Image (cartoon, rainbow, N blue to C red; front, top):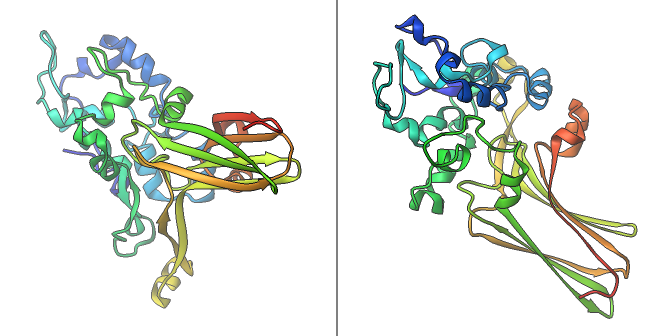
Length: 320
């Protein structure tokens, strides 16, 4: 019954009881939350549209408009209707729904169809299945302290308690992003200038930081005088050459493949050292980026939409 995400679009039978077809009539709060969510705007989000226009792959549409209705993105039916039945993780007393209960709806299994999949070369290019992860959020969760503590995707992104928030707070909630990364700065004066040590720690995050789309990254920047240094945390890619037959079929000489991962994981401490800075005021920032700035500029994605500031401080000359 699980949605296969990038593998195929979602064909749903009509809801058995047509009185149940209008979810908002009985669930106005949830409907209002969904209207403001990234699920609702999965297909008309500025970042997605820019990337999709550049690479209009069928697998993208399968996850971002799984029922074929771009105007609704990922809607109530995508998650809650199977074989004509309205399903949920549980049933409250007095519920009018007669469909089956599926406890896995309250687990990462409910999210994995769209947030865990291989490069869909078979869907997009007619090649054999890649077997190479394109997104691996569910696997990252399974290897995290969150899984050991039985903290699910829903616990962090829908809140705990009687009401589950269907805004699915994620990257549009800066507080969640800032809470996932702790930053501390130490400076030491030397004969050559000022040495700077920045400590990054991922905290209470149930997956890689950042996770999701392969272009997302954290970017640590030190700026002082004419000098700028950066550290980038994300996926590392390299081209994988295609066979002559595959080149003829697809028109591509190679495909992007992951060869490294510099992201942060829960409990990990990363220490970055920057030596011999001049005696000038330093600006130190950590940003969450939906894609590298150069790519965002090429695709026309605004800086405001692309970048979320997680940490910022200034270090004055002579301070330690």
